[in-house]
Image (cartoon, rainbow, N blue to C red; front, side, top):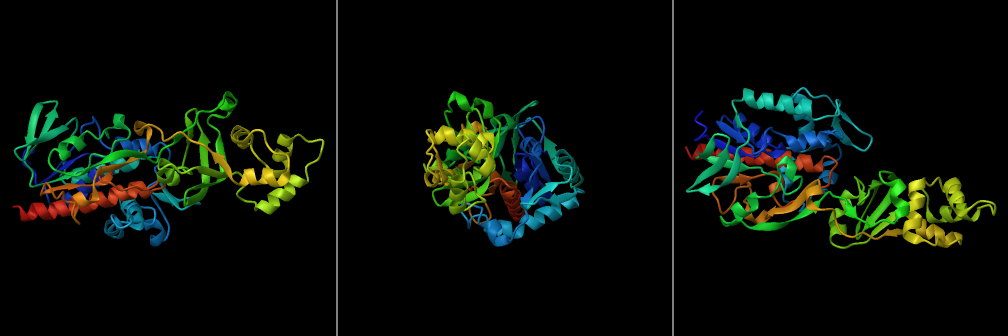
Length: 397
């Protein structure tokens, strides 16, 4: 293949780009896949360090409700949703298991075997790959790149952009593409961190508990509530229980915690009323409610001095307010919202301002929590864009 004139150019070799390349090549198109980094799938490999949560096994209606805006990715997820992702991974020879919460993981609990098998499949489909190709702009209809061999211009029949959002810049997602597209008339929404921790200036008494989990815990922010866990960090709080509340917290909602989510308020009051006079308040809370040292420290941090009256103390335990000072920096977020406005693409994910150019993954302004939703959305949109680009490239022959 003449890499300066492929049928389909895919820029970005994360999950969305890899899936776009697979879909386009599977349609019989000659595909050139490029990435600015020295190797492909770096963010996928980073996600795999904690087990690579591929998707979530749950009813389709519940699954769809995890996405914002809810209708934007719906047709893509219906075409390639949670079960499709599982079937696709197994087709790569990857054994999977479903955890107690419905999260789906490779049995090997890492991303590297899946990525190796995926890249081998792409090579078998004839996909040409180039690393260290940095996209720097559009020049008279050509895609201009800086490469180890110097400047290169590529003239594809159709292109899929899958350059990620603006989180984890050291892994390649730096959002620098936004200015290129904005200068070409594409509507760009401001980036905001998503699936991130939140800042809190702790007192020195919390230092021994940095890294400690708070679990189980009920969480509420605005109209969003859930149950899960989070970790006390030096900067504040982070973890899977926080991420679904990120949008509400980012908008200024107060975080409310239920430190004893398995007990109704009346039962907590009853247990506290049975406190022996010989027991300190801390010992009583540990014995009667099985509170961990980290939960006790958090309670003291947020509500000192604690009331001794059972009803008042129980109310604190069931609705502890934790003041936060905003989200972690964007570079430390798992993902971002913002980027290409949903209205800037048509139903095939083609940019209205740039015919023949499609976008996928975190470049687009949609949001989803971790738990497999984020990765599934990237895979589904990448497949959708790759298929559309292949069809467009065919008509452009």
